[in-house]
Amino acid sequence: MKRALIPGTFDPITSGHFDVIARASQLFDEIIVAPAASIKKSPLFTLEQRVALIEEATRDLPCVKVASFDGLLVDFAKEMGATAVVKGLRAITDFEYEFQMTAMNYQLSPELETVFIMSPPQYMYLSSSIVREIAQMGGNVEQFVPACVNRALKEKYATK
Image (cartoon, rainbow, N blue to C red; front, side, top):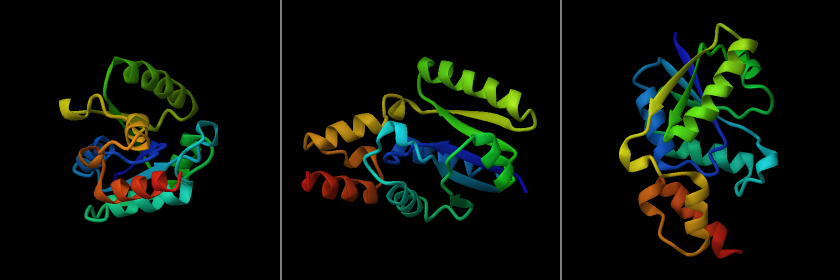
């Protein structure tokens, strides 16, 4: 069985993330979407909330599981039995950062392969931080996120 990880903060999961997950699910037998604790980023949603939102957004993709992690990606990949890491690329700045991370991961775990999936044009500008900013200012993010995330953002910002 070919198992791949898709790591990230997913604060929150966007339509761009979902696109990468759905496309990767066509390439691997099992996908583990792996939200990282990312305390240093001060996420809007708790880790448990991010896991729940990803689970709801991907519930119609039977080969997709969700498991959070805190630590080195290469260690988590070994623990999960994953042979590949899938990363989405939007722009050249993503490539530069992901290239560095891939090189470091290769040094730590040469058997762990990295696969890049290019974002289609409609998602190349999309990021969780942009979505959060629009939602915080009362803007409509419905077209940028799964329905469960849209509801969660409305609830989160209604209480702030």
